Length: 123
Image (cartoon, rainbow, N blue to C red):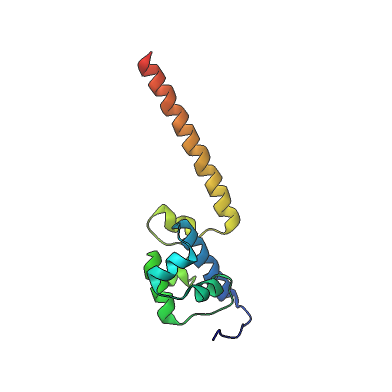
């Protein structure tokens, strides 16, 4: 039986936002994260929406499945050290969109430079 809805605290909302952003950056659906973590998909959905404050056991399972630290997921660290994915996961949706556009522009520039280099070598 589903738990009754609670008013979302600031920490619960932050946890949900971090969970969703990290899951999406890892290219996972809620269903796949559920399989990897053995946490029920409806609970993952409620956590991401900030409607549920999960037990510690579920948080640990989610953090392990996403390969992130529990303290970062809970908002006690501003940035997870390590990969660029960990850094991007800490961004709010608006900043994540900006970062995505910047990275796409960098890739396009690199591809254009590589094409020019090939043309010069072939000339």
